[in-house]
Length: 421
Image 1 (cartoon, rainbow, N blue to C red):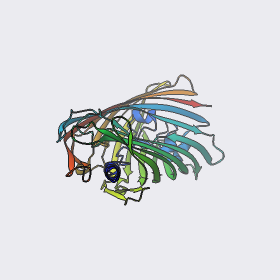
Image 2 (cartoon, rainbow, N blue to C red):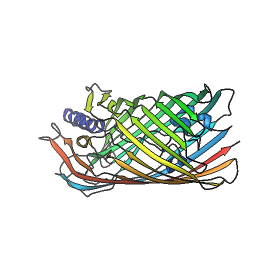
Image 3 (cartoon, rainbow, N blue to C red):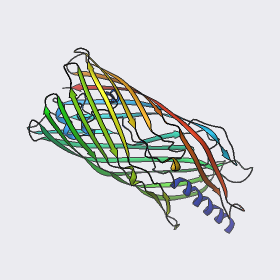
């Protein structure tokens, strides 16, 4: 019995050491809070005025919406993370960790009441989905990684005068995560499986200012606060038969970072609008990830050392006629993940976006938006070593070392309905 307990404790410690290095390290900030914005690479976010998603990026922008409006949309993100390389000493085939995921959005804005405007947004500001074959070369580093967030964001805006408006909102955020990896159980023995999942609700806020020096030009600054998530979850290590070897609880605290949006809009003439944006995200908050256990083990602390990142966007609208608007845009998106800290769960690198979009308005009350983006990513080298066994479960430390490169790309398709009434 003592030997069994030692084995279980070793599996528990090594399993959480793997998981704690990746639990909420999502270098994935979801931009797709609007399909109209997708078509212009999110340039002018918060002050564009072509849908009511402005309230997500800058709540002061609600004054660009006329009367009462409802909006619902979805973006389908199809990613590819192709790995080329090898692992030592276990080997295994190369793999593609890309997945297809929907990102919905929902908005409702009330009519103006004097100098006040109210609305509510439901969005998904952070997310990650990667999943590899169960026998791939990096199976001990990770198989499935999934993070989902949902923000419920009521907000209000106040018109100071014809040129200046301000806004503020409260964010109620739900986060849910699931991570799996292969578990080494001995030479010649089929792998087990390590899984951790957890969820939590927490709060944040957003603020915005919009300045319009003329009818054709406006500028905005939007701010979304960090949300401090304290995630309660469960760890399980299972044998190939499905029998549970280890089951325990764990808790992690992590700050999903604050974001600042700087945006500009200028109507060049009755047909052409030009827009630009810069987004700063405080990813350097991820200097470490600390996991606490419910069985008396000491905290597990993993250095992260991420960098703050910027995204720069340019876009344009072309009003073809009273029914059709065409869009195009370009964006450069910096990755917060240093090369030396890249993992199979987030094989992230700098990306370039090339986007197109269109809106069709059959009447004054209804608009259907379409958007498409092709994203190409820089090559992402990886050298990741994971301890898979150690005394007393093995005579010596056994590690899996993965080396190679990821080649990443994505296609995004979006459709959205706007209704004014």
